[in-house]
Amino acid sequence: MKKVKITVLKTTLDKELAAEYGAEGLGPCPMMLEGQTFYADYAKPEGLCDEAWKAIYQYVFALAHGGKDTLFYFGDWIDKRGVAICSCNDGLRPVIFKLEATDEDAGINYTPVR
Image (cartoon, rainbow, N blue to C red; front, side, top):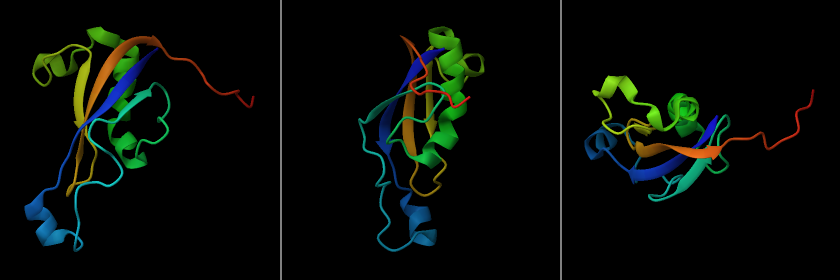
């Protein structure tokens, strides 16, 4: 298993939907900042939004096990091996992430209780 680099590419706000459904003063996600990077493997990296992790972890897992040769959906989604572009599930202000396979080995960084 390899580590996967997670980069926040963009924080967005759907102004039309936010005007109709959002709370007053709603803006782009305050949890993530464009340019932030994290490294993940089997567990959510510290500082990454829990909801974002739930939306992207399956792609992280696939890249961690398939590495730089992974091409999602037979090339009709992403045209670059070892990369996925995903977003969190916030319908009003989604955050867009770039996931990249690395050559860095993942390792357990805790002591198992059993």
